[in-house]
Image 1 (tube, rainbow, N blue to C red):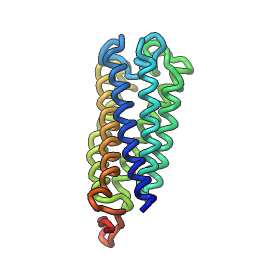
Image 2 (cartoon, rainbow, N blue to C red; image 1 turned 90 degrees about the vertical axis):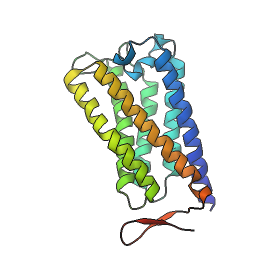
Image 3 (cartoon, one colour; image 1 turned 45 degrees about the vertical axis):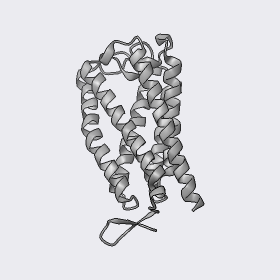
Image 4 (cartoon, helix red, strand yellow; image 1 turned 135 degrees about the vertical axis):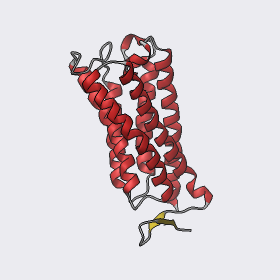
Length: 222
């Protein structure tokens, strides 16, 4: 019971941190001086943007939320928790290492070492969260609610992630890449918020930890 309460509290704080972090990053991106949808989200964090402080606070808050969500997942979802932990570390690195103006990335631009570190960390963080969705979706340790949330998240995130990858490799800096990046980040954040909220309130509705049945479905212990 105490362990369940701890997980519920962790999930609640994860939702709060993620909502606050996403709000701070959104303010930095919308109010910053970047060139609209063509710009990368990370451009809000460059030193002379005027909103670098809000951007970094938001990024570090998102990293904290990923760690808290990892701790809130059921014990049988260790692989998903591990991926969220990797995502949190990569998110911290992306916030700590600032890219140069324009956040250039290969193959169409000439990046600095800091750009490569920042860009690589950002990509790794997003990929880790998307993979965590897939692990939850196909894990028998997850209850039906968690799997449904993961199914919706993965169904939207995977095709958008493909568009981002292709745009980065074939088109480069463009409105297509800027908009698809934003959509992917919104989907990832939405999955984290909904999953955190679900885990926070699940036991308040009387549902206990789920257990797999012989047919592969999950039922809740009362």
